[in-house]
Picture 1 (tube, rainbow, N blue to C red):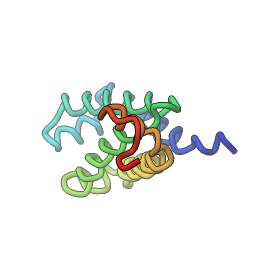
Picture 2: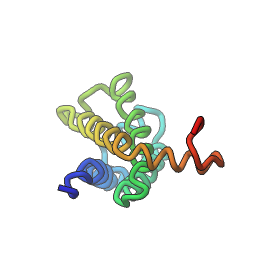
Picture 3: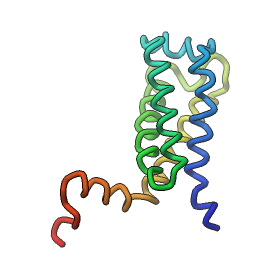
Picture 4: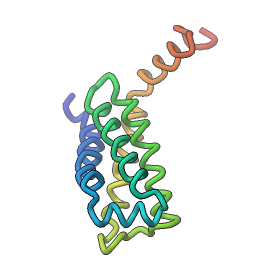
Length: 135
């Protein structure tokens, strides 16, 4: 049952890694998206690098929450771009890219909720407090 606990991490990481091929090989759909957003090629390559880092962090248990936070922020931008500029369907994909972005966002939110204590410990250490305020 413990392996099912990591399922959201794996789902998000696999989707992020799968889309890297299209970003890094300048696939027509990726180029079109980032041209439409006015961010080709820097936005395409930059978002690919961020997604690669997020996927790597998601795969490792201690840093999964960091990867989830990074992935959620990236997917928030993707979802907002679909809703405001690109549309749900991109170049006849039937909304697949939008659905994948929503799936990664949901899976990442799940990881953040599940691993919230790890994140809080990190923040407390970063701020120089080892105990919660008021404790």
